[in-house]
Length: 352
Image (tube, rainbow, N blue to C red; front, side, top):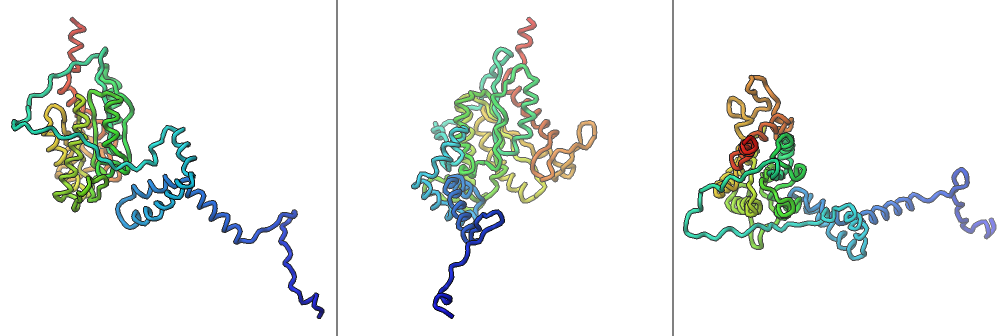
């Protein structure tokens, strides 16, 4: 065998049918990984926000540990700019913002005298000067809120100032998911409602809070430090709403199919009810528990109507509402608005 024959020959290039060159599988893997890395860098702010708002636990800790450095690198390379520009163009610049500030109004200074219990004068409204109504809260507010909007649509004196502002998975424990402490006062200033209807707490029956004041730690759900901080947040939402002159109806959490969850909801309801009682004439707490309880006082998905017919009130998840339940809550809200405001005397003045 000659020396020429013993030299290693270069492998022939692989060519597919039609003359197209074939690349090694490793090249495809490298290209795919590069594309994934580029995609992660371009979307780093959103990935980090998604990690931040996960439930407490090791998965959240791991996701934050991974996405934090990626976001830092994306910012350093200016690769976060295209996403931010797109979000700004869509009017959603705050989508990736992680805002955990719990800004609440300072409590009124004690004067040494009990707070006045005289309710404010009943303000009059008419078709010429309508009562402006804003509805907001977590996902539980959506169905009763839509019912209230339908009822308001048939009223000549109530004017909704927007659709139901319902935010899924939000609440007062996790401002990093959605910051109601910033959103509520912004909307009060923008929409100038005379009446506000809210429902919070459906996602707050846990022992994990973000946005805690510096140096403050909380114990488990329902513990003394948890109650103190949650009470501060509830009172802050109430004051942010009512110090502008608006009247607030706060819908309480319902009985659910889970006795344990209902017990946690009772803890939240007790705090809300006691805070509402401190603000007579400005806040009304609407207890929904017995609206949806069966004859034995326990959870009932179907409830008898006034005609004796069974009506499905609760969704299959055992927590949310069906439309008849929303209609029932809306009627109770309207009763409270009619007690707080004069919505009917315009008819007599018109007849005169």
